[in-house]
Image 1 (spheres, rainbow, N blue to C red):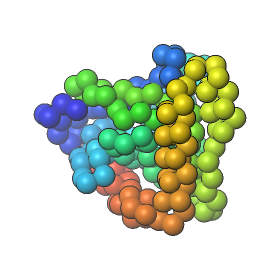
Image 2 (image 1 turned 135 degrees about the horizontal axis):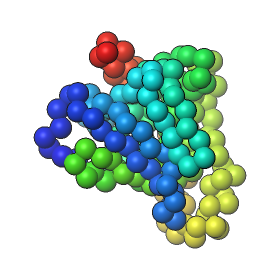
Image 3 (image 1 turned 180 degrees about the horizontal axis):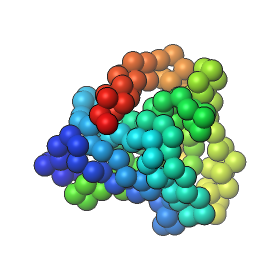
Image 4 (image 1 turned 90 degrees about the vertical axis):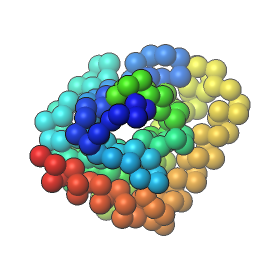
Length: 175
């Protein structure tokens, strides 16, 4: 990450799949950092897009960009948002100035607003292991990380208890 980012700077998040295909991309604002990683936020009206799908958000959200194998997003409840916490298994972001690039690794840990918590996209993960020739050590690392995150989100280990939601409150006051 560029050491000269200051709160309020634009940060682009750009994701691709393991085989290089483009995936989600969106513009966010840099909020700051803490012991968990770097926090960026999005606002109602923000455009989120990937090949074949584009939508305009009606929610505030914050995303934690970690140096670990996940990216965690905390959402404000709105008509569009079904997940309170959405954790993408992904490679640690590589920073190019104010752009964070990562590889989406299919599995997601999701907690709905009603508390239901689960791992999503198991079928996609299984298919891509073959289709994209995931190395065995990557498969094992993603699986281990997903299982650990599922437990952490369920029992409320930080940043999944209060920290993420405190950052969400900050972004709601931002604009």
